[in-house]
Image (cartoon, rainbow, N blue to C red; front, side):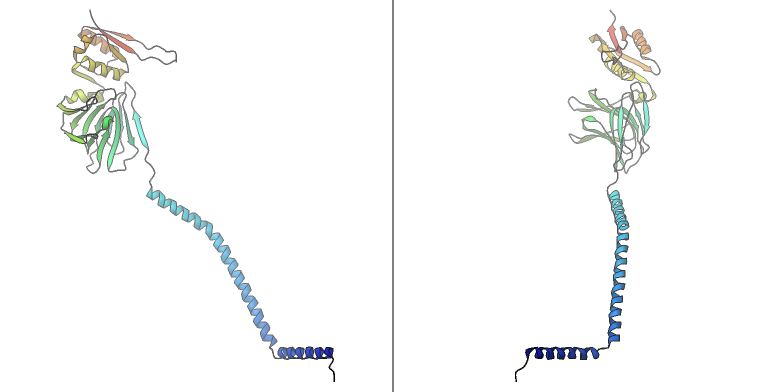
Length: 311
């Protein structure tokens, strides 16, 4: 008997569906639904927790970043302190100034002089730089040396004492005079050091770089800080130099014989005209003052004094 192919395929399909139905009847649908519903709820809770954590992390990131930046800046500020400002004080010609340094040391500056120093001393050494002339009264501090630097590599070093430094750039000599205490004068280039005792003066030659020490009259060397000009058998060249700086004038000597003249006097409040008049009365000289004139660039020339020998 010949089998119909279509009928065979239909019977096979009926058997497959019968088997599937039997499997479905053997399954607890309520229990399976509860399982699926619980799984869905757990996934939803998990998504809500992850979403909350992402938002919390985002909200905390910026404050943490700022806090971290501030902490790093704090560490950098502590590791690298701010640079110390340098202060420069200059005294005009014809004036005498006094300043107090950050360590309470006192400094008198002569006419046309300047000093540079830090706003605060931060190192083991208290260092200042001088151009011109100054009298130092150094606050005692054995743990922090006080150094005054001048040109030509000279350094005057002390811990607490009084001394005068005359280091005008146009002078051939730099003079250091000790009033009291102890100082060491160090010449950085040769690397040697000279200790001074009170009343002693060290003279350093800019020309041949030689050093000489001698006893001097402290009153003559330091009376300028009281506004006085003191001469004791001073040569005319020294007198001219002191008067030029004090009164900011140019003085010309028109006779070589004038350089041999020595003069002794003490001036306090006298003007340049009064000093020249006294000079004429005590020596065979004649003084002429040429007042400033306006130049083509509208600047004024410096007052000039011409000193001649009387015929």
